[in-house]
Image (cartoon, rainbow, N blue to C red; front, side, top):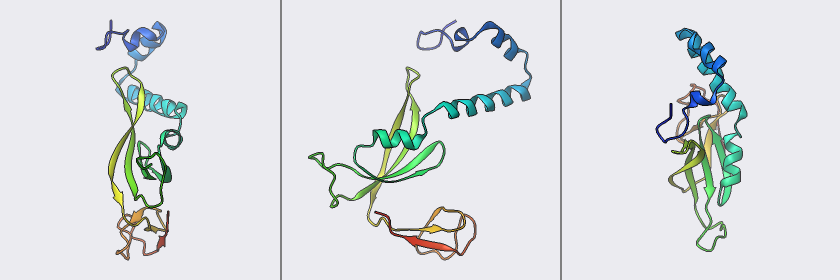
Length: 150
């Protein structure tokens, strides 16, 4: 048996006893096994924020980790390769992406430049909110705090 890219199928890389044990599981047990395997894989991975820090080409201003993706504020290098305070900060959506070879890499999606890097955070839930609101739309708290971040 082989997979779609011509290599051995994943089951060919597993011990027969494990495959036989998995084949005997029912639906609820298979779901529990999938959850366990996903947690195990996540525990073995380098944290997303560490991968971003290692790969970023520019000055990192902040990483807001959301589990499977992160929002990254960064001042990218200019044409000369140097980071300049005059350059606007940019916002990126960064996630892991699996290539055809099965290897994971970071996928950086540019979301736009940030004109004002100050923002309002809810003291209760910690999420970003629009600076014009008085009540957090995420948790309903009226306790928001304006912070200047560069």
